[in-house]
Length: 259
Image 1: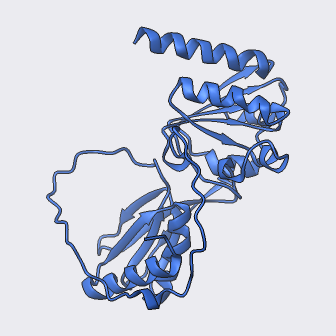
Image 2 (image 1 turned 30 degrees about the vertical axis):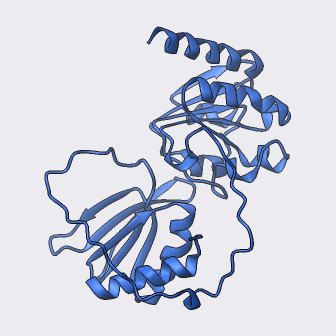
């Protein structure tokens, strides 16, 4: 009942062996990055992680686009004529649309027993939250080292809650002990692609931008007019975050009360 990479990988490899699919895709979540490469290795398949776009060649081979070097370049990967072709997809890069096709759901049975899973789950600590999960959120508010301390992150949480957003953080804020690693957005944290990303007290390091650069709209709040984030955002507010953030929260609350 608990997730294990070897269990998921073995089950998927078994399903691939049963159905011989041409293409297999999953989300680029923490679990997807964990078990999908193992499954690909088990079935000797080609694999590309963190795809931001897909296409097909005339003969049905998969073409994948993915960002490289902290979103500074885009690589186009064309699969050879070997199957299955496997890839993980960055969350929120495609809008959900009604399909004209009629897919079929198949209840499959895999040849997997408890003895095949060598990993033993000792305990599971779950962090309950009423906010959306970072990698799936349509709106995200993140705080950086400019927040000063963990207590001040209440401003981030208040703003996030006022707009139904997830709460994130930069690596600098996490390394400073302000918030837990689960909130980290960036090259060494979670990769997100929300419609709206609000960066509060975040300077805009390349490593952070690598994790949120594909956001549709980026809003930055920072008191330093020379902060790199202002070169990358769509809207910038140069001011004291301890004044700007509560003001934004109040405005969102007013808008929601009028809705």
